Structure formats: C-alpha cells, structure tokens
Length: 286
Image (cartoon, rainbow, N blue to C red; front, side):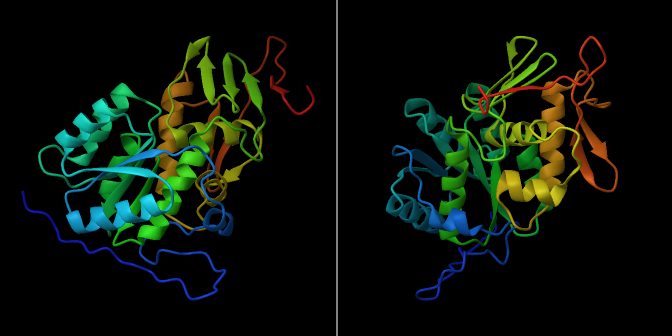
C-alpha cells in the first residue's frame, strides 16, 4: 500500500510569548485557556496509531513530556491488540494505515467502547477523510502537517471534557420529556434506556439542551463545544446528524434539535401533557 509522505510541521513559540499556538494548516485555533491549563486528571494512557515512525516518535515525546502515558501501534491490527490488552483513555488515530485503515479501527474500537475518545489525524485538504472520520465517531481531528504541541493540547482538551465534571454554561441535569441529560455523571437516557454518545456528541447535546429556544450559530458551537476560534463548520453538521440519530424519533424530521435555516440550530423542548414546554433543571438551585 502506497502512503503519502507527510512531514510533521513544528511550530516554535517565541520566547516569553503569551500568544496561543495556532496551526496555520489545521481547522481550529487553540484558545488561551487551553494553552495555559494543564491536564489535571490522573495519568491518562494515550494510544498513538501511526505507521510513520518519525511522526509517532515526536508525538509520543510531546505526550510523555506533558505527563501522559503513551503507547504506539504501527498498524490497525496492532492497535486493536494493544487496546484490548491495555485499554487506553484516548486514541490518536491516523486514517491511512496498512492492513486496516483508521476508519475501520475506529469502528471496531467504538463497538467495544462507545465513549472512548478518538482524535484523528488526517491529510491536509482531504475534507472527505475528515467527514468520514467524524461520521464513525471521532471526537476531534488534527490536519497534517501539524504542530505536535497543538495535538497534545487537543488531547488534553478532549480528556478534560470526557471527565465526569460539570461544563461551564451547561445545566447540571436537563430533563426534557423522556430525555434526561446528566452533565456531571455524563450520562444520557432516553425512555429510561442508556444512550451511548461520544465525548463531543455529549458536549454538543448538553450545550444545546441547556440553551432551549436559542438559535445557535455553527461558529458559536465550534467555539463553545470544540474550543475552536475558527474551523470547518462541517464538523458541527456531522455531529448534529449523529446526535439526532440517537435522540430523535425521526432523525430526518427532527423535533428537538432543529435547523434554523441561514443561522444554525436550536433546541426545542418537548411539550408536556398540557402543551407547555417541559424543561426541569437541577443543581444550581437544589
């Protein structure tokens, strides 16, 4: 299998600079709070799956320097073996792999652990690859060539969001008809049944449901949910479609997460038996 040779692009931060790192090739900027805040959780295990040993060595070095336990797999089959033997907390996954590609690896990992965070590496300009990666459940992606430092920050950001802590701007618990969203425990039930969501799917659902009746622009969602100051808005579109598939009775004709044409999306609360909008929140006022 032929593989495009894609170098790692390293970005040096000027001495004593407080400016956040930005990837001139990638889809999203790094917010200042992301660049400054270290990952405060227990040592997390990150599995890096990339057959380019140069890329892998640089990424592993940055992750280990940031306090992560990092392992490497050079192909899809090895990645699945390592993930089964020593389950990771997050996977950095290249799309172009020998044997089985990154999309299939992501599908198999998701089948075993729907909530496993995945950050995909995609080639510059390959929009179809990015969309395909998001469709199979990637939480985030970084475009090659990339800054290893930015990748480490993205890993840190996704892991922080996957922890069972409340998210700023999001109500602790939202009950909307037969849908219950607990943002502290990071659980969702629909009709009493658990709804498996990826990290970003959960973040998106929790945010829009905590702002009922408000039209939210795609760029606002990129900033508030993904932490990107700019980026590919198709990321939001794909995740909205995936969330609808899991919480709407008819995803093709949504009644909860609806489209506001020319703007973005809006959460319409389900009516109760009297026809009034039902939204009960807990946590702020007991």
